[in-house]
Length: 141
Ligand SMILES: [Zn+2]
Image 1 (cartoon, helix red, strand yellow):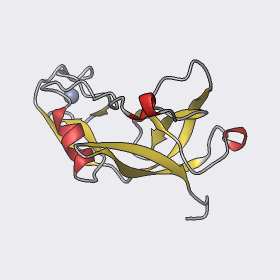
Image 2 (cartoon, protein in one colour):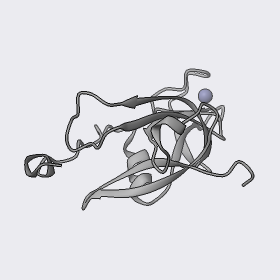
Image 3 (spheres, helix red, strand yellow):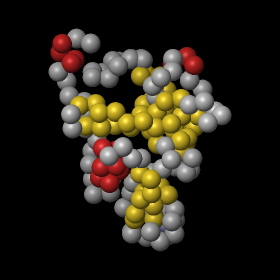
Image 4 (tube, helix red, strand yellow):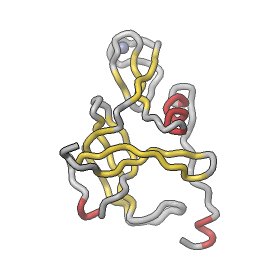
């Protein structure tokens, strides 16, 4: 990383009334999924209304953090600081049934596979910014 790249701040999540609980959870080391208070349906990303019962009352549940890779892409170009490359971006199907876009670490890009079991972990990227990311786990766990 060049000195110029090192000075570029990491992009921040766009906080809204609907998703603030999710990022507060990440900062506290929890992966929270929005749940309709009416019909209990889980949804991610967070939204103001339940698409099933059209209710507006929402709460959240803490996810296990376990899931499998539903899809992925390995980004090589163009390199955008402060990200590191190759950057493995995954769509994780959580055990609870919702899907979540995140970053994958702990595996060579050529070894990433659809269906690979993964588990969430949290990293403090900068002093005031925590992000979720996933890491492969042994299938037997
Ligand atoms: Zn609902």
